[in-house]
Amino acid sequence: MSSKSEILGRLRANVRETYDMPDLSFKKLTFEDPVAEFIKQTTTTAGAKLIELRPTDDINEKIHEAFPNAKVIASNLPGVKADKNPDEVEKAQDLDGTDVGVIEGGVACAENACVWVPMNMKQKAICFISESLVLIVSKKNIVSNMHEAYKKLEEMGETSKYGFGTFISGPSKTADIEQTLVYGAQAATALTVFLTD
Image (cartoon, rainbow, N blue to C red; front, top):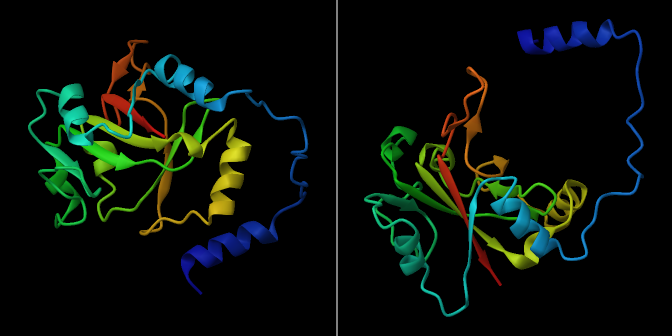
């Protein structure tokens, strides 16, 4: 028996009271137009930028318009011209110095502008080490609330190629130290959502 199993076994043996899971049948927050609400929450509450892409737009042109000073772009998405590919670098540290990371988002939630990002790249560091992050989100994957988001993930059989996924909403920020708002404390200093049809 491993030490982890032994510790968990001791904890289970000393549980005095158990509690049922809470009832989740209450009415959830829904929106008449989840796409419009997602756009609003992304650009206000989440503090991100949003660019709507038309089917005729060239994604590489849009990336360079949004980030004209970017020297290093990282992505493993087909059609994106990137200087680094998170599937091809040997270690996560090789992505250090990435100006813009471009990744595909999955299910998006209108109530809080969160976007599910499955780890479909070898090095997940691209999601956190890039100075600016671009999430490509399809309008058809936007739902009203987190309950719907998890249900849709389940229905889609959403799995990550490398067994990891996370919700990302807006640029990284914190005001823990002296109540001064600092961007980029734990991850990207800026987030841009490219919204597609």
